[in-house]
Image (cartoon, rainbow over all chains, first blue to last red; front, side):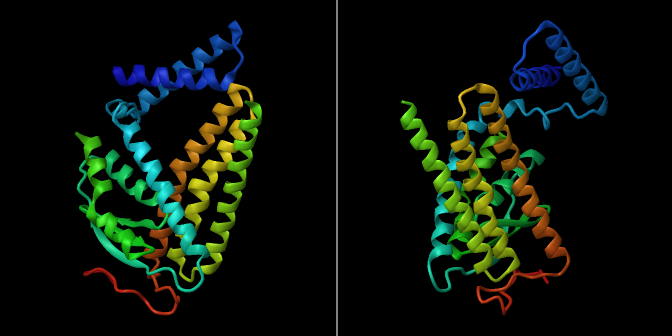
Amino acid sequence: MRYIIGMVITLSLFWLINSGMYSGLLLTLGALSVLTVTWLLHRMDVVDHESIPLHLLFRAPPYLLWLAGQIVLSNLDLVRRVWRPGATTDPQVSRVALEQSSNICRVTYANSINLTPGTLTVEMGEDSLLVHTLSREGLESLTEGEMSRRVSKLEQ
Amino acid sequence: MSTILAWTSDACLLVGSFLLLTGALGFLRFNDFYARIHACGVTETLATALIILGLLLQSDSATPQFKLALILLFVLFSSPTASHALAKAAWNAGLRPRDNSGKRGIPLPPRER
């Protein structure tokens, strides 16, 4: 039930901010479409802890802030590698342990690796990720596992 | 106040454009398929974010600002998925990563071929 309420609130906010026009007729139509979409999603059986991750509502923002910092740092590193003359890359392929058990945290981890330039998830196995990195340091920071630990903290 | 905002917006757009150029240069300079995906990573994360931030500061009403923020959110959700799809398709098709000269393969982890 709380997932359905969460879905209604999310869709209503989305509609209100995107519309920008608040006459009675439009608000009624908006409410009707929100309810229709929620009913459809409920029938499709996709309104659950994966589409509406309420348990991550307060835990995700600190992680996202940290991730934004990492994205900026790795971008700067890659900019240096691109503009410096000569051979600046030392590509590595390796398997990195995947310690998360819930689907949403596994996806978060794999996508975080992809979002930081210089590291790329090539394949996802049952308990490990196949990762391609542009440098030895990039691979070391992944195997050292700070990102993995922070994603695991989202899970508990 | 508005001059500071205008300057900040210009700076964001300028740095964003420089990062787009960097992504394109990296795409041309790197010799390997996988390394080129990394170069595109610059254009789809920080460059996109800075350009959208710059445009956001130019606008003075809430609706377009919210829509720009939504565009950034969707780009940040879809671009890692897209690059993973590309890399996985290449890996399954038998393309293996090569070193920075683009001529020799690099050592693979055990049990990979």
